[in-house]
Image (cartoon, rainbow, N blue to C red; front, side, top):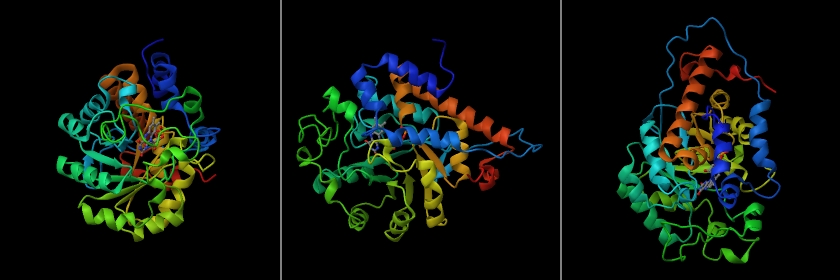
Length: 353
Ligand code: FNR
């Protein structure tokens, strides 16, 4: 294959490079993967309404998220087990994010510890939290704050682990885990279950909105809620003082059949009404996808699988290249749409379906 020139090329190369079990773990969604596919097709359905004869000679895509400057509105979503993609795991990813001057979110289920990742990161980091036990969650949040992470991203769409049928068929039920090595024998405790019993060490199903005042009481960091899809929950999130919301369906890996995120975004943006920052992830593969998300009110987007494809194909360099491809595509998309900066992106850039 010729050298990769877009994210889909990286996807194909990653599939060729990865053991099929790891590919399935990264690529797959839950149940019938309806939402996984819909995340993409919803972007493809949206049409753009460009303006012409604007001066787009100088086009800037710098921005900031929660006050942190980033070179583009493209952040790295948290994803588990980068060690299944490359031996350098999250260290390579963090170096790449730093080199691209953007922000990486480290998963609780990472291969390398939050301190190791912080030690090599040149850019800002957020720490994504799963609550396995309250005691361990408190320790992790405080470790992240001490290490210099800039926010806690609480993932709220995983009260239980969904059925990922590719993983069930592959008997893929554990991977190396930096943050729970002793307590859980190296296994991700919530990973791959067929509905119930095995989840006794993961208490996500007992976590409610009351967790937010508790989190607030143990950390001064901003709290970002990841996995909100409705106006109703966005309003509650605001009431509980969320600093930001990530509209996400976990990349089609949790409740199958939920709406694609780009369709959920407008109602969340409307409910939030400027009271906190809103980001979106799920199916973003092109600069034009990012442009559509920004036009519909997102302050930034996050990418999940594209990072893993870059990592699997060529470690740090691969991730960096994926980020640079998206940077170029977004800049060109803005110019072709008649925008010289992110501030020029109007809601009217996207056709109302
Ligand atoms: C994820 N995602 C995820 N989210 C999270 O909050 N904590 C996690 O540990 C993980 N782990 C994870 C592993 C893998 C292999 C994938 C693909 C995804 C979800 C992730 O943060 C994000 O919401 C989606 O990946 C976004 O969709 P795209 O960009 O992958 O289509």
